[in-house]
Amino acid sequence: MPNWLEITLTVLLGLTMLVGLLGLLVPIFPGLVIMWLAALGYGLVAGFNTPGIILFALITLLAIGGSLVDNVLMAAGGRKGGASWVTIAIALLAGIAGTILLPPFGGIIAAPLAIFLMEYIRLKDWGKAWQAFKGLTVGWGLSFAARFGLGVVIMLLWVLWVWKG
Image 1 (cartoon, rainbow, N blue to C red):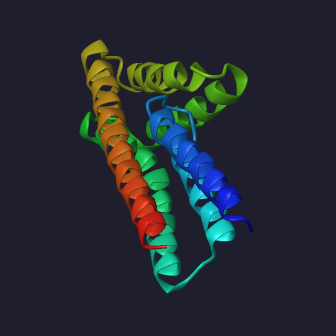
Image 2: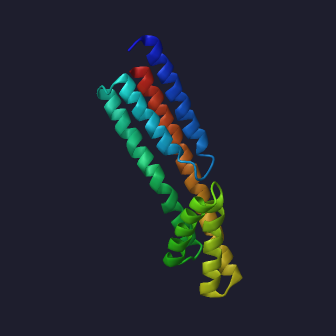
Image 3: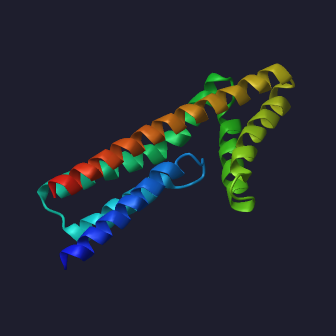
């Protein structure tokens, strides 16, 4: 492959990586997946030498972990706020349904609303329902911070790969 083409593709993949990172600011945007795909694209363009394989494996593990941390931290926050596991499961399903039916913000509205309503129905107490709601939203905030931090690490590992490549 001509050098100019490899440089052009690397710049485009770097921009894609940056879009994925900045996309993490939007809760439903699959930024980590986009970053992982950009890293895969770079590996296909530049080749997977030994350091590339190691760095790509680390990027893959971080992307998987970041994708899971969202639900884990939200559920933990909801539980800490007093929500039942059934309520948390319903909130998760409501978030998925809201995202599908009313993109891009339907899930952001549906999950917290579902946890609040389900806990009120279950406990007949506005205060406890509010606590569960706050717990879920605090967990959501923590999950954003974790995903964004992992996204920064993924970007740095990719830059290291390009630099060492």
